[in-house]
Image 1 (spheres, helix red, strand yellow):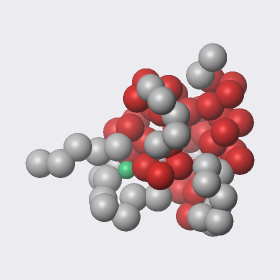
Image 2 (cartoon, protein in one colour):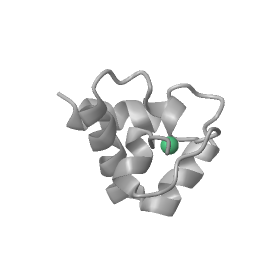
Image 3 (cartoon, protein in one colour):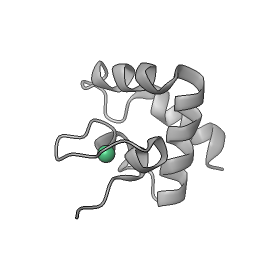
Amino acid sequence: MKLSCNGCRVLRKGCSQDCIIKPCLEWISSPESQGNATLFLAKFYGRTGLLNLLANATDQNPPATVVVAASVCCK
Ligand SMILES: [Zn+2]
């Protein structure tokens, strides 16, 4: 059994090798903050909206929205 990334864990979704959330969170140092940033975005955009957003932001690493979420909830 493999471990889900912290984003998938808080969203309770399956994580895969080509997970789109994982690379967006890797720059955040603590696992707890990674989860908090994901939850914040999921509340704001909804689960599906968040996944769409990250899928469309592949040219930005990390995506600007994730940076904002991290700065709001990971002080
Ligand atoms: Zn994942």
